[in-house]
Image 1 (cartoon, rainbow, N blue to C red):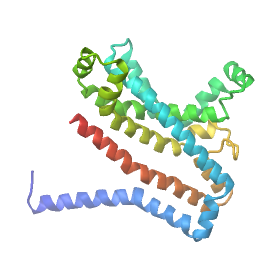
Image 2 (image 1 turned 180 degrees about the vertical axis):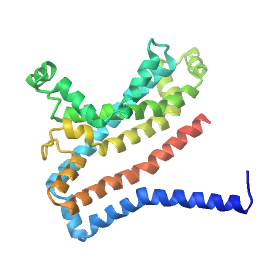
Image 3 (image 1 turned 45 degrees about the vertical axis):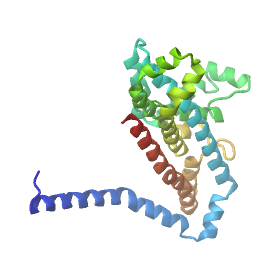
Length: 273
């Protein structure tokens, strides 16, 4: 490695270029958004985020993201267990399917749910008949969030699970422990940071989801209108200040969750080490 003056100059130039690129790509837009959201003063900002439609949209995004996080933590852990511990046929195909939501536009997920559960389809018509509509209703929102965030729960737990020694479980059973005791005292403690990290990532991704929900939610104010779609509606209605104010709330959630998720991921990595 070249530690001479030219090498140091090159390193400084590279560092400066990377810093400038990240600043232009991320920091500047965030600062502009923050300025636009509060440019009209605190009263206007509060009026924008306390508007009943905005409150309902933020609440809907929040609780559906929380439900998706819990369900994804459970299902993702179970699926990671199957992929790591069980030699099931087609395991590679299942693993590829887990990553599929990352490879397709999220709008496609909404279209798929409508194609399966829309009110004009046999399944959707039957569900509407028994009072459980999926498409253009809250269950469809949760289902779309589960689809687009599936990889987060699985991939967060999978590497930690690969490092766990099955001998610990065998020792627990040999000493007479019940399956429940082994699960809660032997398996879950080392897995918990990874499960929590996946849940935080799921929540952060879900609360900002737009593409799939713009198609599947129906976008009914006070009922099925989520916050990101509400922001677009405010922009189209000629209210960029209101859109920026609600966007700032979403940004604050992201900035709060990012270090929490990073800390949990580091803790999970420390357990593996």
